[in-house]
Image (cartoon, rainbow, N blue to C red; front, side, top):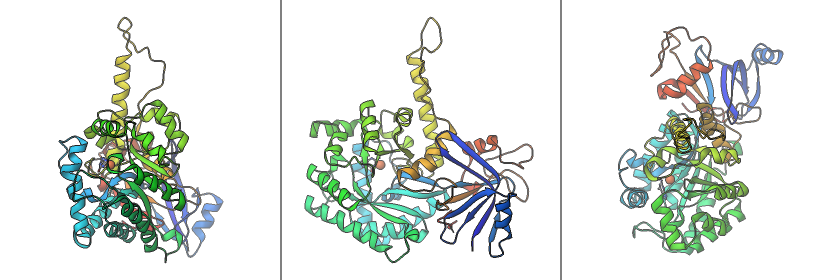
Length: 461
Ligand code: GUN
Ligand code: FE
């Protein structure tokens, strides 16, 4: 018995290429995979609609389905203090807020941690996020609760138990390098064990090897984790070249940049996603491309902690995989719409600054022959959907046959009154979802424009 969705579908399967499929049918099979995408009045469309056992969902006028967003970098325990304390530089902020909050959750996994993680999962779904790559805490139990909260919410979670055998907070550190490595391996097995009784397509959580960043990890720990990732074929995430104080710290302690430290430890792989990468020069971006490592671009958090913006256009031009991250609580919202908007803003500021720097005073015009550093809203939408999904090895982020049906319903207008919803106002009828209306939603939309979310075909909002 398949589920048929009839109406307008919007997706971006390639960077810069936005497709609006009007009057289409997306057929979803009983396992939650897309069986077909076709025009509603085609022969196949008619035969789908004639199936007696099919459940039909017809989208009202002025509504459309979009793939769910992907959050490629989020610190789940930091949701505890989201929206506070962003006045400090990174290394001081970690000590003043992050480590303290994470320790609090580790001291109360079944109480505080469960409460924070359950609420976070609800918020993400309401914000249209269908998959998140998460940093947790040090303690195994707390991360199992995080995995459990996401699995129960029906939300895809890539769960990173933190590895840190060094810390500036004496009460928040693992006892030894050896116990850190044992615990990393143990978490992988326990996390996989949580869903082992379920069929593959219903397994929504996956463990990820997570050395926090170079300053909290010895070389022995890093190379041990590199070995573990290769042996078990498990994904890796960390922070790379994020902030001035962090970059300087690594250089003075290790004598090399953190990209070199990761590479030596076999942690720069095609299974790896690195957050930030703001301080990477062009040869280092080439190195990411060569390794097949993807980037979680966190443009809001970067405004606070990184004195340099991520060279997004340069990374995209050489084919580095990029998705967007909220970096909660270094970024103050879980809503990926904010990350999309901030990615555009940051890229435009970079482009303007370069134009000004290369301006010829006598001519008044830019001498630059190269392309723009700015991205537009369609490119940002790609990063938020397909870009992030691809970095995680998911087939989601697009409406194509064989992909899991991970989708969100966006309503521009109230179907009854025809009036704009949320912040949207229209002076005329909204009978067709045009590019202009999509752009308006991209700029002004909020959770009140979202009425439903499906993950693996299952309605979770
Ligand atoms: N680098 C190491 N830990 C963190 C963290 O918790 N947040 C951010 N933004 N950067 C980090
Ligand atoms: Fe982070």
